[in-house]
Image 1 (tube, helix red, strand yellow):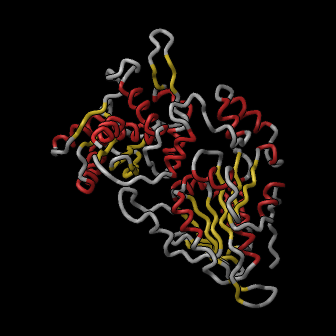
Image 2 (image 1 turned 30 degrees about the vertical axis):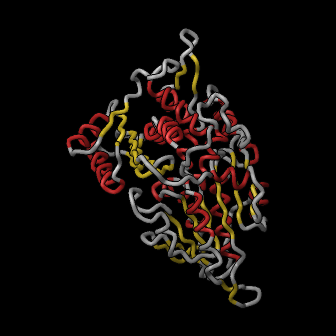
Image 3 (image 1 turned 90 degrees about the vertical axis):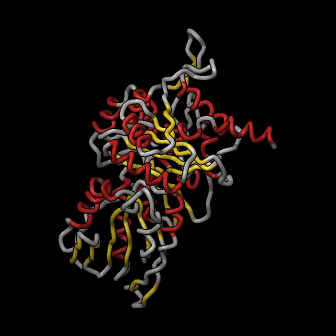
Length: 436
């Protein structure tokens, strides 16, 4: 094959390509060449073996099309003579040596119900590549790892059909969550973490880093995390919910119990989401994640969830767009309980109900009582929301949604949904302990 590939790996990319470990994390700063590495490692595995089959994915296909697919197009699809077949409906690229690259999104079409593994159960691959692996639930990643070593390829040197050495490679920016625990904080067998930094990318113009530093001049956290690629300073000591306690709650298993409560944080059109969380006692999970829909659509979806989980109460943030959701659910006969963040707190130490609810959840975390799902978005939102004590009246207050949104780029919909759901759970624990 006389095909000219223009890819010249950066030093950290080369280390990742040459890694013998099965589970590879290539992660860090923006501009570090993460997607480029991922696509070219998939291509490398495909060309080293004839009739091989590898997969490259993101959690959301809509995001894949806007990001990873562009790298796939540049480094694979647009290379003259390399691709002989591309089925855009089935998301399959066949190369000149008969190897195939399967691509797309791993998330099932409906996040309200269904098997989260449904997309990946039918995959038969030799290697798997996941862009922004922090978006993927850990259980999906672990199951996806079992879909490797399931496809034999032709070894061009021996002429025999063999299983290529498996690779499960992921990329991401520094984030709290299971990825950091698995690769950065721990030494799991057959895992390797290769950090990337914008300074490693010799292909970027000199103005790239300077421009980002100027844009993020008022946000040193973003400079540290997304420009320096620093994984060590993700703990915000001003955060109301301690990061170490959040991660302990992710790993903790508690029995499902009572009461059954659904909490809903309502988003309007735009990049805000409507998120619903159910708790059974002190165990919880996310049951609704929807973006860009009307209040009536959200209300109808919550009603379906209520019919399934039979909650004692459905707590709805009824400020703003949530008012319509709460009103509609009440009209339908569901047990709605408004959550008004700005209402007066029962405890005089707190500025308002929102601050009291956040502090109550903090107490549950510190006592080691709750179990929360391994949802990377929720975990990261929880870990960055700050509290302060006012100088005038010494009341505890939580930074506003507006300020959080300015720092994160999106509203803390997941964190607020958990806080709404667990509001008052500490009192339930205290009364049950007394009764026992």
